[in-house]
Length: 290
Image (cartoon, rainbow, N blue to C red):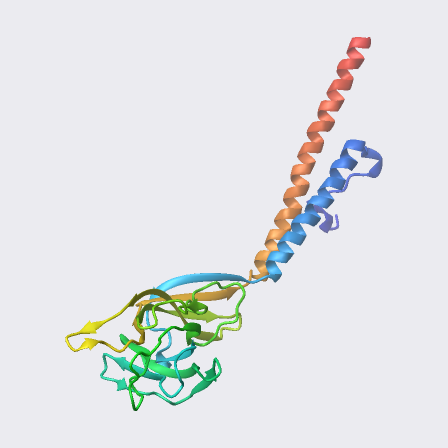
């Protein structure tokens, strides 16, 4: 007897003359098709889109930076001449720089009465401060007006990612124009290292920060202390990492197979139950008539 490979067919076919179409079966079949299409499109959208996964860990993510952090500062002082405005930098490693001028620019505003300071500089990864003041001026003014507005204060690379909402420019838009002209301003910053890794594995290093501030007029035994705008910073040991991820293709295919198979299985059970109940009801009605 010749070997028949059809013996291994587990999907045996039922002749058409032994099947019976019903309106209920047709209705359930149409609903199944629409339901499968809806779930397929939902899964396809999720497969195409990328998700952002965040995690926290203790480490210095940017070890190649040489222990430095890039800073970008943009601030306007509408009532202080540009000749008087300067940037000073200090930290716990002994750095003490008065009148930092590298990569900085002063723009006269308010008909020459004020100044807009824009600067890019680096700070060490240790606690310290940088401040806008008149300390570098050749002649100190009697009553320097430190009212100001901050347009930008950012650390590290600029992240242009819509799905990531963080405090990368927390002081952007800060307005102290109506404050006491003779007051000093302290901004206490807690800088949090942040890493963003895209689908290709490329990493960008930036920094978020939280801020608290106070305003005060300081005095010493010699009289009132010249006001300044202080940015006192410290680094958090916690690093925030954002990673772009996309659903693996094998998982997408597995989900689609589960959707199609599960939907047809459940629909078949429902249709079978309805058909069995309908046939039983018909037999009951025939029994009553006889």
